Length: 436
Image (cartoon, rainbow, N blue to C red; front, side, top):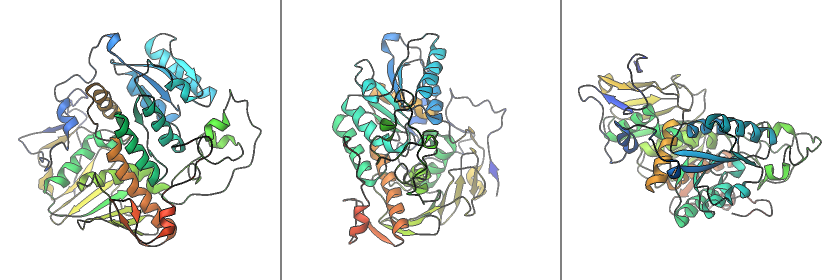
């Protein structure tokens, strides 16, 4: 086995085509549009020059570490102007305002703590949503109803029902939606999907998705004195989640693995890796039809016979980085991850191929694709319909794991066959006055 990666001196830049071939050795995709965004980027400046009056004006909802990282990409886009930021925590919204003001050399960025005030601004065209998971669906649906286009971090839903509602809302209101599953626009992941769909691996047999521990806890952290709402608006921070006493650990980001705020590790990473497997299998419009729990994940099966294995970090991955995927056919296989590297067999599939090496967490191309989609009113690669299917698959696998039994699933109705308990877990109650 050989690990292929681009040379630091190769001169591949973000202004050039994502995938480069020498002597025509790159594998062609078997279905149109597999690397459509990359093809559009060839030879074009990634940040065009544009008049101020033609800029897309944006607001930001939720300003934690990941959100501020994605924001930096938007601030580098010359046809975007960020005009407002929202967070329930004063220190976060003020720090993010400072980021925006420094980027633009002025003091024009507004701060608000209630996202509805930001959405009420008629001059805002689009929003970046980077709250905790509990808010993603509700904030996105509210933004769509307010006439905004949406770039939303993942996981984009807490349940199967939320996944369906979000996709339906984006269709009904005609909004552009990009889920923050940025590996859809990262070169090594694109190449792996392209290879799987080209037939060069032979008939696909199994797809492997790197996931995390599905377990969550129902425990509450000890109650602490409640801050003033302007410092931390605890009621708004909770939003649609059930009420519980304030503890600063939650607001510092340690809400993960608490059931009320988090759907578990299959959804956390599977929203990326299962999404990649769906794409590789040509299954963006469906889901597997069977889910069987394992010790650290699940095995699912598609109607076409392909097996989807969701497995944890200690399950024999090749060490190519987090959020790894592996596609196996009867004539070869490929594995890749967030390092930007990949291993492929047979070796002939990598002859004379150069791929831009890029961290799997980098959203720069994904952000640019969203901006272009807003301008052209075209659907981006991680649109709501595509993301809904991969999230539904992750939620269904999690339900099978929690119940500890094999489940049959109907992708047409998004229901489990003859299992009332599993079907009840497709949705959660949300706290008044919030509604989806």
